[in-house]
View (cartoon, rainbow, N blue to C red):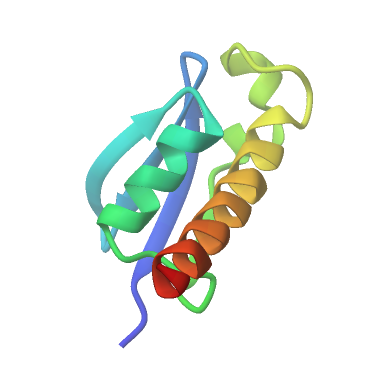
Length: 87
């Protein structure tokens, strides 16, 4: 069963909830990738975001930066999965 993953932006961080339970927040893509890995979140899950991601400049980000951070975190996560598998 897919997880319901919800991203938001607050005070310069991207917040993450999995199945309606808060699991963390991060100010960097590396930290966000770590949260995703720890919680087993993948792009196959049901991913949603608050309008605070779309209007993240109201939460201390540059315009569009919160969404870019989420994309970067999934890129990092994918790279780390490959590195772990190759190791």
